[in-house]
Length: 349
Image (tube, rainbow, N blue to C red):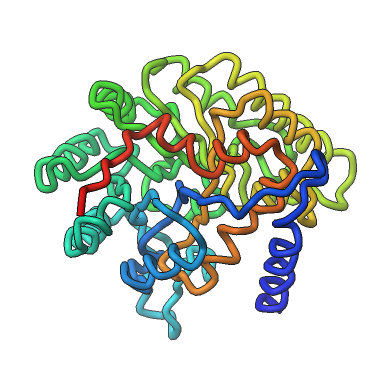
């Protein structure tokens, strides 16, 4: 069934590439910068850097923001099968600092031209541990002139939150203050996963956590991953509650962008299918948001170690690109990453 869905999505992408519903104009297949990809999965395994680069080439992805994964799934002594994803069973996850070394060593072995396509980030620290900044500085010292940002930092994250050892992290926890300040000082943008809403009530119950962080650290560039949306927030076919959430998320996003100039978003993972383009039909309300804030959104694959369906995942955005004016589609697909991160100069051959 999963394979059938992937084929259908790919066919929709292919048929959409030539025609824009809104402008009636054709867009060539745009080069993409993937701003959200995990090199490893929840047990720190990966298909490998060479496979990832091949998948990028086939998908017309020029550059990629690459994270490790800050937590690892525990395989308990009483579980017969090894869980590979965080919600495969109820076993907890724990923080895993070595994930950053795995990323760094994989990238460092590449040729310079290949390295220049990869923008690695530090994520292997516990957000509620005040020693977290020491880990970040340690990685910077071990791999100088290598890291371009911090993330993806997990705060509220549906069931992953309750599965994580220790106190639940939130975007406004005091232990993150030194990390935010260091990030601003070193011009390191932070990619953040912080659920905006409670899946039960569909209310934006946790918005205040992210907003307090934004207010307290106005000079820190923050990328709010998935626009705060998460699994279990499906709205299609639900009652008025779901529609209130869908509409409220767009209105809240607009208000936040007007208020906080250092806030950016990536639209990877479930937010695209659930909110922005349900059934591969881009929402008119969200198209208007992208037009009004063309410099503040980016796209990503959010793959986690398994790159077998990479092209289908990253090219799903072609449906959106083709209903946007070409200059705005170019910004979402490619340019906006380099509003946050300095583009690596291409070496003369």
